[in-house]
Amino acid sequence: MTALASWRDTPTRAAIVEFVEAVSGDGPRHVPVERRVAVLDNDGTLWTEKPMPVELGFILQRLAAMADQDPTLRDQQPWKAAHEGDHAWLGKVVTDHYQGDDSGVKVLIGGLLKAFDGMPVEEYVDRATVFLDHARHPSLDRDYRDCGFLPMVELLGYLADHDFTCYIASAGDRDFMRVISNPMYGIPPERVIGSSNALRYEEDDHGGAVVYESRPDFFDDGPVKPVRIWSRTGQRPILSVGNANGDLPMLRFTGGRDLPALRMLVRHDDADREFAYTAGSEQALDEAAKRGWPVISVRDDWSTVFAETP
Amino acid sequence: MTALASWRDTPTRAAIVEFVEAVSGDGPRHVPVERRVAVLDNDGTLWTEKPMPVELGFILQRLAAMADQDPTLRDQQPWKAAHEGDHAWLGKVVTDHYQGDDSGVKVLIGGLLKAFDGMPVEEYVDRATVFLDHARHPSLDRDYRDCGFLPMVELLGYLADHDFTCYIASAGDRDFMRVISNPMYGIPPERVIGSSNALRYEEDDHGGAVVYESRPDFFDDGPVKPVRIWSRTGQRPILSVGNANGDLPMLRFTGGRDLPALRMLVRHDDADREFAYTAGSEQALDEAAKRGWPVISVRDDWSTVFAETP
Image 1 (cartoon, one colour):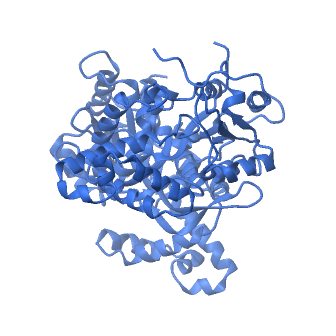
Image 2 (tube, helix red, strand yellow):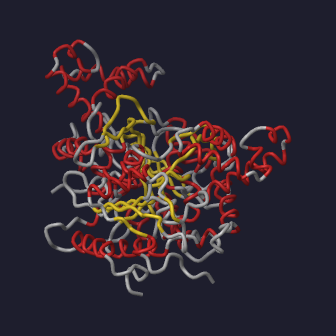
Image 3 (cartoon, one colour):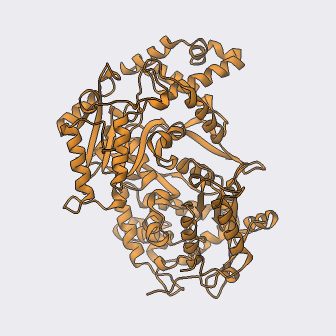
């Protein structure tokens, strides 16, 4: 298969090829293999994030199951909305968030932190696997596992072929993303950087277990992204792709004083094939325009958005 | 070169070969490649930790440099000891620690947290590299970079040849170990798990910097080790090697309910070629004896301890 086959012959594609050939060639912009580190956001960058992040569906399913078991939870949010399948409440949380009111987000996070309290990480992975094996996108007529952007999967392959080491660097839950990162993107679990609740080790007679606590460890967004990327890789990346304001520090951090850099944003401008929205990406798109970072237009740069499903 | 050439033909070596062949063969104990994860402690497991961890020399050098610049620091510990080259104070800190008195350790850590406050991670790496390019062991007649245990380097190579992914999992400073992990052990920076101070991202016009704060992020020892191993790898290891009590939870965590496991301890019992000590390893050695975990005797299992130096 031709590299980047689902990319149209546009300046964006040309910028990618020019950069990757320059850093992997013998010329003045050569970067040694061990420093060819790429970081890519997940929700909205590698797969679709509308109408809501996939992970939220998993959490809501869990909250609903908790409310099924414990009727006292049914009167309080977010269990109430999960139990009643009340998408309007969730929609309002998101709308309020974009208008600067995070009171709903706090209620949601409060539930989220309790949803997996005390659960061993391996049980969480098993449950997330079952969820992802069955979850279907509400409008795209495909399973969530088939909602990855084919051109981005091709980009990951193209980078790997040029000896890049690619990481996911996302605000999404790390252990949730680990379930799909290898089958969907060829990225193994140790190269998934994301948010997590705090963990503790509990001893037992069978090797013990690492279990979630009901408090956050970190939320991997905004200025936390460069910190988490360093912590996990010990490297400054030379290529990064995001789609939202929270990706800006990661994009700025890329390259630094000494290394060549390619920073890109995905712009969702294709209501026919995916979604069209800019909410949450305004600053990022402004800065990309100002600095001349390539913007990947779903409508213009991609000949195909999703792989054909079996 | 024959695999494990510096290992004598002992039951310990036989246990390693038997396990590695079983999990990488087609028999009932086969483990798929992606689950062949090994974790190894560093100080006292991959290289010598006596008379003191190498990293401590680096911190003391930095504290002494701070006291050179700021005379007011010369009256307070640990700057006073660093400035005066007072090894007796440090020796007492260690002795007190083993006797359950950590007041000195706290003073030392207080200095350590201030030693790199506000320093960009890349500057720290540069300084650690310079230190490690010149640091020489006080009694072994070799540079610190030549203080790796040759049989353990061979073990890492043997595991890699059988498609294991090997990580360092150590209480040592993560970013310090990253400087030597690849040249000494063939372990890249993204596979070094260790302790770290907290980090923050600071913007500037050149890609910004990730800098250290003067507070700990985590100290990667005891029950924190399984947590950090999961966070970094998303896997439960099947092989682990340590040498001290702080490695016990990591060893217990290895394998778990479902996977074959090999857990080993290095026993320092060779005063002629390295050092002989058990302080800090008593519980670990007891548990190894109780559970039948192989104990690697420096004296009996290794025909050579260190590689010949150029």
